[in-house]
Image 1: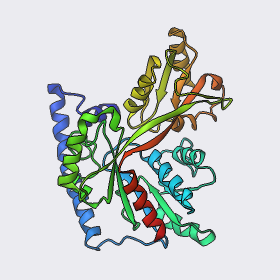
Image 2: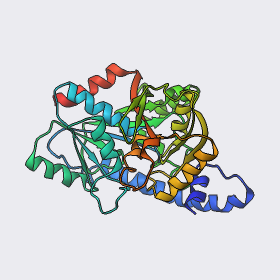
Image 3: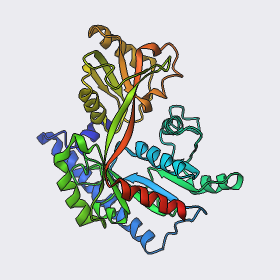
Length: 351
């Protein structure tokens, strides 16, 4: 049922039998859109308070469901603050941990690996978690991940990430579309960062036009995801970004936007024999890898490729062929508006 609803939200089902379910979802989306407009109005007018946690806050979020590249941008911002001599702390909601009894998340482990020594805190009550942290330690900036709609906490800089591969879906809010709120919410954004611009450059004029009419910026910041190499999950051995060029492989991931990962591997000239896209935040099992290794055997390959976000979930599963699994290490590169982004980050750090 979840897959079917997702297909309707993405307009992947267009049969006559789907007309009624789409109409029902549209009616629900009208109600949801009205609720979000009312909620935003309450915050804008001060009827619902936003809390100041005592240090400046940078929020990184998006206006759609699914992966837009927020975590690489959070890593980029955290590194920039560290380079400037500041101490950032990342606050995560901690959505869909691999172990539901845990207080951590997959994204938290990714950020720690990419920015060694950084404190990463997870929890739904991010106001409370921030205040608890400041009772026992100090920091210069809190970075909120996935927080554009989390308006309970005041922020000095509000950044919205937009995926060039699927910027606004079909223009409908949840559950008929993938918008978390009506596009008018873009007017709250201080900056917009468009990711994967190299994979869909033709969409940029339409994206920029939407931002100018719905937002308050004259233009957006552009970025691309850059592959930094492949890393073996067992040994830590690193291979160059072209280390699997021309080689057969089976790839898998559980991302909000798996197409971005697939297209990156294709750009690196990996011979993809199979590409398996699990649901976002998928909880892997040994059975998944029985299927993947069977596909690899049928394809005459031993190599399994995935992402760091997926890789951090795998080491706890017993019996996996870790020596055959490589994750693609990816970073973000700002290709347009880098000085503006840097200046805005430093202005927050200066207070």
